[in-house]
Length: 296
Image 1 (cartoon, rainbow, N blue to C red):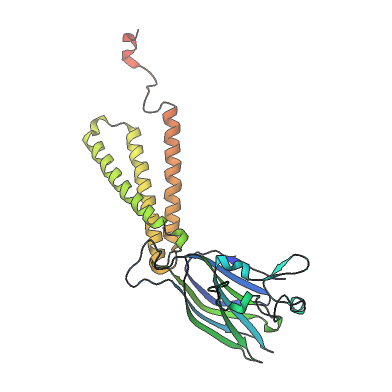
Image 2 (tube, rainbow, N blue to C red; image 1 turned 135 degrees about the vertical axis):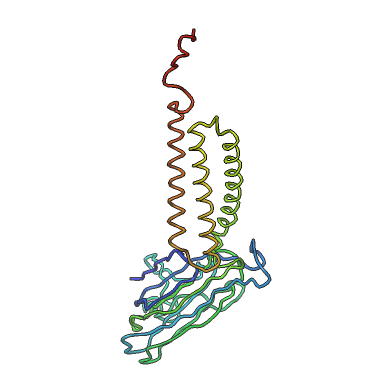
């Protein structure tokens, strides 16, 4: 049975700490990447690349084995795998598929053209980590350039059952021209920066008006100021979260928790204010008091 877990990116620097890669299992990472020329933000020293520094160890090495790494653009997904007679798609070449001529060698990923760059297959990067005989260790230290903008995949595969369980250590770092932030999340950085600036201006204006007309303030207007403050806190927190992500490649727990709490509190308070205003709070009186005698 082939397992292909798609690991969502909580960070753009992935650290592997003796994680077990079992036979017939493929690990997949998927990240949006810009090229330097097409990036919305870049500096003179900007790069678009993936840096790999991985170590592989077999605790019980008994025979030859193989671990493979693939890096490619999402448009090249069709170049991977083969379809058997039952219509099922498989990424690993099996003995049956090799005998039928669907792939060249059992125990390897099926890649059309064997990863060689040509007009039909530009940019499929393949790196084999072979274990010859009883060898127990292997390593990959490489930097892969991003030549096309879009979603990119990194696969770590162990297709040969003879490889056994492999412990993976090290890291992979995905660098966009603007930093570590994935391309699909980059728009949040300027968005929340602009929102923080707008909320700051609105909050300053509201506080100034409240101070100027403090003798005429209604409690409702004070609560509205509280909602604006919560909106400012939400925007600043999320901006800081994405800024740290972009600078360091990982997301902190504290900014995420504060951002979620501020967002939830703002939505809750604003909905409650809308409800009490609809019920008449702050805009109507429960009784006319002494002025009732003057009402016709």
